[in-house]
Image 1 (cartoon, rainbow, N blue to C red):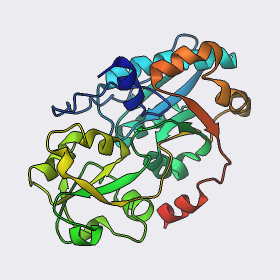
Image 2 (image 1 turned 90 degrees about the vertical axis):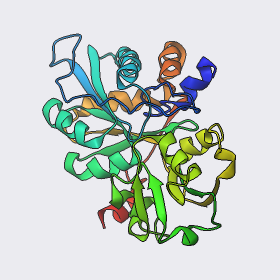
Image 3 (image 1 turned 120 degrees about the horizontal axis):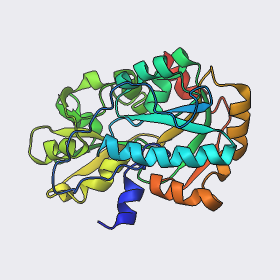
Length: 296
């Protein structure tokens, strides 16, 4: 796969906006993502001057250490553009790992998968600032795929493979809406995106819940041509840029004024490296419907 294609598909993750994680070959099962242990951020200047970030890219594939290097480059560019002394942050693939880091480091901003945003919103008084504009980032839309059935109702009562079941509330209330609950199936939990696809190909599961990045990957996996989507969710943001309730007003105002132009001019190189094409500002209440559904 060409380097440009790797950059576009993989972080396209984090953020679509945060950092790029090189994806593994579709013909092999990618290694389980390494988890970043909670730790104090490494700062380039006085800790009191550094602006803190956290990136939570759930269900991403690839190396967390590689992702971290792209994030460091991006944050250096963001700090320069906003006139901050420095910016630092950590990349995580699991919400549970990120929670401890957030409590200890108290970041001002975050690039979060949509499910992570909804799950962390209340505890940390999160306010959405922007969403990433990019394709195939993963988490932007979900699908039920199968080899032998013609509808999601046909899949109910049967085995469903997925690597997206860690937050059942997010799947049931936001992703699936009124169409199904995870309890309608016999779950076959998987850890890796391609492993989920192969579970259906190999007959380990009748159906699978996957996201848009996995739909793209499905066509590159041997036997993937036999699979078809029989249900899809509404579209949603793959990555949300948020401010934490503790963020100083001046930091938020500065970042808000530059966020849509951060990939222009001398920021283009950092954004390209991170797999980001653009950020679009959003209203504070833009996700009111999804938030109400998630909160119950």
